[in-house]
Length: 315
Length: 315
Image (cartoon, rainbow over all chains, first blue to last red; front, top):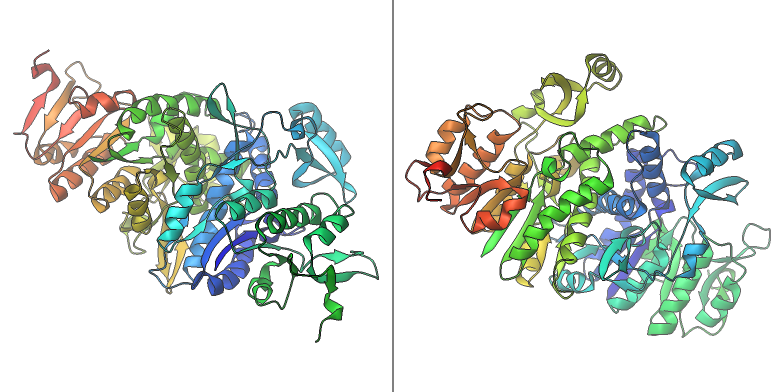
């Protein structure tokens, strides 16, 4: 089976956790314990988010005042190096020595006319209090939105149009490689006067991973995050985990999901399932194997009739 | 012809130049104007240094005091992402759209017993004055040496033993890819209790590139740097550029070359030429094509009788 597993940036560097290299590695290990179980006997592609990581690099950049902050395309490329390395190394430690792993830098094209450029919505980095945010807004022209009672920097999140390295990824898969690619939503690029240039944006990781999953004709598309599935009435006494759902039903529900958390995942799942007829899964980093066995997470498929909640399943 | 071209980190971010993203891109363009001319019709592998770049990331890390500095293996991986992306993008802009380019993260094994760990010698980052260097020594345990009248941080530079991604590189070459790999000397790793772990070190880029060139059985190994060749009596009125030299003659001369500049390049060239019988070239980033045509740089080959200076050649 050909699988694309997208690891959430927030699952690799969890909210409230100090953004140290050690903490990141500890979370990567949780993911790799799972990924190692599916890397053999399947064609496995791993993508990952980079929200907290690119935020950290932007902060480190900004703290060193002698050199102007590097643009987001370059920072994304740095996170592809950083996260891709740690995932590749930790996964390799859990697989036979001769199992090949390839971490490939990936550029993705976006449309210069994408309306996202007029409306930055993608939060990166930590939560600031108002005084600090106002300072950064004045000094650096950053845009902020209120998230969870604090302020977070937001940047444009244009739609991914094209992954440039699809052939290279295919060639590596054909040789039996586990391929780590399209990290951080891919390096955002666009054509300007016939030349490919970097873009100050962050492509949504779930949509980039969906484009990857469609592009490589994946049999299943898995999004592993810091939540164990999709819920209705999330955060209330009535919350219910969705075990199985038809993409049309999910697309309808997703309108009410919060931006920047489950909504892009739900939309990416629907897009994949509706355009390929293959299923998608959303659930926790530590449950990847159980998700693929049908025992955890939310399964999105055209073969499901409307929706089945976890509490409706046989124990 | 299969070529390995190693781009010097100092040639990509020149001494005295501000370490901005724009300056780095401008130097990459100079290299890519040359590389594009040899990418078609040859099997081209590109490696690169990262001395100034990893130094910059270490400074940015250190400037943001809330999170401990990330270790050098992670920073190296970040520079592979950053530099690999810019080189790949700029090269792609100079080649037909369908010419495949692959930037592959590369881990290299070093020996835990390498004597380099007891004797840090590899300078990274900028030159500090004494007061600042003493502060960093006390705060972070960094080691410094005097270079060109100032103080530079030095880190261990163990010998590269093994490139883990050689098969992946070969597979991509076989498909016609130009491959960017082994950046920054490769991500330094070692085995510790059967697990591969990152190492606080920087592998010399020239020796890592030499190991790559030997590993892929390159026909020619090119080191492109900020000097236009090897000179005797460098920096004096009697300086003479070496046009062609036998590796035994060069190895003998190299003992007098300054550490950290031409000496590792000369040694890497000698090692490659003596172990493979194939030639190596050392010269300027802007002269890569002319070097391969025999019109610039220093050509190291077992077929040369001792040494020929440029001023001895027909005009």
